[in-house]
Amino acid sequence: MTDLFWPGDHLAGTLMSDEAFLGALIEVEQAWLDGLVAAGIAPSRAATDLTGFLADGDLETIARGADADGNPVTWLVALLRQRTPEATARWLHRGLTSQDAVDTALMLGVRDVLVRLGAEFDTQVRALTDLTDKHRNAPALARTLTQAALPSTLGVKFARWLTGLLDAAEPLAGLRAQLPVQVGGAVGTLAASTELAGTVDGAIALSDALAAALSLAPAPPWHTTRSTVTRIGDALVTCCDAWGHLAADVATGSRTEIGELAEGSGGGSSTMPHKANPVRSVLIRRAALTAGPLASTLHTASATSVDERSDGAWHAEWATVRTLARQSVVAAAHCSQLVSGLRVDTARAAANLAAAQGLGAEQRAMTELTGRAARPDYLGAADRLVDATLERARRFAKEIP
Image (cartoon, rainbow, N blue to C red; front, side, top):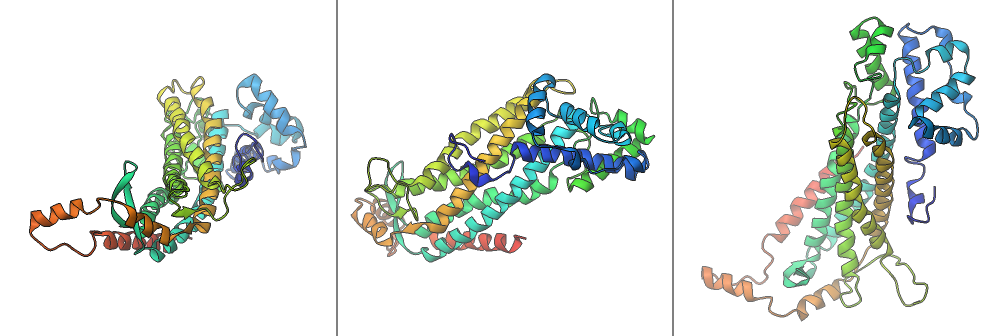
């Protein structure tokens, strides 16, 4: 995919694309049909490969038809019932409702996104671990509220970036394992599947079998409890927050008058050939600025969910999750490029520290207060903090599959 309004969109590939979503919907319908046959509810002759009944142009047809019914499932099922053998058409989608298919397909798409993000975090954590260790003792100026504050090290700065990445990355594996299947039927009571199976236990077994077939977590219906979706949004925003903080520091540190950091290959200007713009940082910050409002939409939809299928709030989730997920993947790819190629000017950092005025005031005050001689540096627990972060990063790297 490409998107002139969002440079770098191609880096997300087909993740959460129309084609991927349609494929996920078919995967859900296929797994449910297979489950009905395996349970002896549908006859063996109903079994078939649904993908063989799709043709070029179907995506456009289904997308246009979705305008009539408010979701793509109705038209997809109708199309498949027209083309499949009578036994298949008779049992296809029975016991499911459109929300079951959409919500479960959405979880499949999100799972693929989380797998990709995990790989990007692997790259980022390893690269930042190396940077932190390499520059742990490189003198640098710490700034607060844009002004010179106290002596520090580049290692401390990089360790803080690394902490943000780990805070975002560590929960993703757990979230991926918890992505739930959705099987509730028309109003979330499993009424139709109970009739099909003959017992409530049988209906629950069908739901659990679908979860197993799709490698999702078994779950009771969550039709109107949308915390699953908001948790996904919050996790993606936390990722973008970490990348955005890192990118903001790089963009600031690459200012001409500071010159401590630089992207491996800066972007060009259409009119000023001397420039090497921090384009990776700029595009990462763009994602960080837009992620929060997208997640806010998911929370608003969750808070305004009504009845057993919401009138608009549910529908607002799909494109919002897709946009947030794809933009997060793009930001992740840009961040991997950024930290892997980051150039660090330790001499410039030391010179900026040396040029700062008045940095010893707090140290003199502490010396007078305690009566102890001043230390040769004023770095406090910096070395210990860097060690703790590096140890955490190394544990994370060992746990990566």
